[in-house]
Length: 582
Image 1 (cartoon, rainbow, N blue to C red):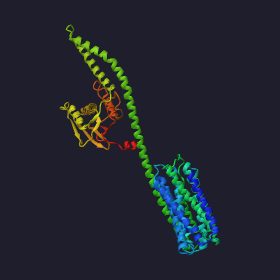
Image 2: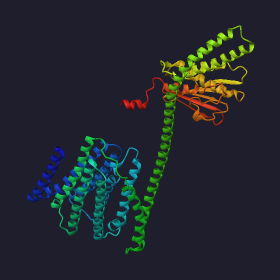
Image 3: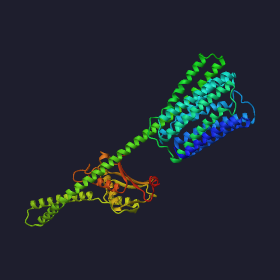
Image 4: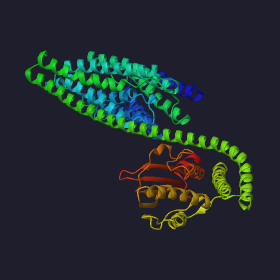
């Protein structure tokens, strides 16, 4: 235990000993009023202040915990103030029943709710509203129980003896239930929370013993203000003050108490279910088994049924909020799963491109020299005048196929030797227009229309103009080839800003994609043999990845295919980067 904590405990013990000795040595009325009324009032005010400070210094469920503690202590302070006003200022005996008895009885409920929500097991994703509703159910149930058992004899038929007996027994039961909740929280916690729950449990047990003794003394007529009972009462208040002080020390060391994951928090929800089931039983007992008069039986039955209505509404509201939270979690899980699939697909695709690039570079390098020799010798043979017509035709065919193979090897080398180019801030609109113009010169009498839409106020991107231009041209060429197979159509190119990204979409009205998930695989092509190698879109994928962007493809609902490219806007600092830097 820290040295300053030991000093505080020593001061508390010294204060109790001094007050006990002084009450025996100077039993005057002002001194007895100070011990019995004003010192407890001061201690409760200080405890309430420390709990409020802890609430403002914490967050999340810890803040809710200290807020409920503050509410309970404030109600206790209000009761003590009413008692002090009646006894020390007005100088009249405290009546029975006393209006402050209601506040004194109910002040335990918020403190009980604070412990029942188990803030040490809460996470940032747990709803504060749900925890608040659990605490409200606990408080509402005790209000109904008080109105059922105690209120009629105290304020309707005014049977003081029955009222005092029931109040004392019910108050003791409330304190013991609070002790049970504290014990369960103590056993399920560790570290600073365990110390805190243990302090609350000790303070509650001490207060239960003192309050029971005081109530018995009042019933027997042996209690007087400032007696030895009040010394022990001050000891109990000092114990609760120690809880608030200990909590402030913990928050000073760490904003959130260190707590390993524990078992599920079932105390508050389970109590809500039991409380709802108990009230119809009370109503049935009051209506058919109670020896009271008819009006009291109906009153108790109405109180029980009113409590059922209130708790049912709150529990259904809580269930509705839980269902909404569950649906939200399901959506988040599905999005996380889809994002994971996309990341895995991109990782697999990148691995394919890397390994295939190494293989292609090796094979193409080995074939480059033999093909050059074949082409050179075919040229010499074709220039010879000693060949027959058939021999010359065969030499030309060999040269034609060798040139085609050489072009294929060049494509393979270009695919395998992709290297990050120099990047600079650039405008995308001129690149897109140039890509469409380069392909548009080949579209005479083909019934294909290339258009650009939504190109205003686009931010610049950091990229290599040659690589991005080649990527755009490759996508446009694929779209044009697809449109030719259906006799023409439209290709619409759109670009816009979406948050921190620039989005470029190529949407055509062609036949669509047979296998969108395989489009970027190397050597995958649907074109006739001899027209495509299946490496163009794979190279485009690599270019976009090198620019820290994303490229996706899909079939449009109205027909045709759509390719979407996302590139990060230049000069935009993302919120994630700011948080990481912070």
